[in-house]
Length: 116
Image 1 (cartoon, one colour):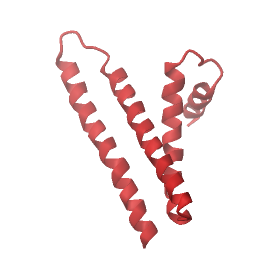
Image 2 (tube, one colour; image 1 turned 30 degrees about the horizontal axis):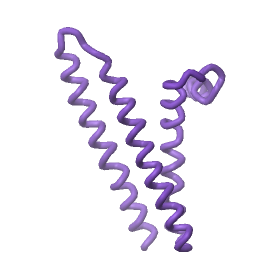
Image 3 (cartoon, rainbow, N blue to C red; image 1 turned 90 degrees about the horizontal axis):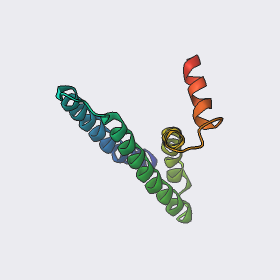
């Protein structure tokens, strides 16, 4: 029961900021559509998503280390799915923002998404 409780807490801790970012992006996109000269609001949202996922990942890694030191291995395993899910967008956004995006992770990911 303790593992399920901790998993639900992690879903809430991760879900609330992501839902907040979603609603904020909807407000920003709607306001951007009304402007006479729309700007690139999507880039700002992508940067916010990158920062949010990076902070959540750092928090989950710290929690993972603390749980392993306390020998709470089952609870530590609840962090792993979230870290794996966050890893793909973090690497993709980082690769797109960097200058080294020729034959790396993002081209591999784009090819996989095209096939789906």
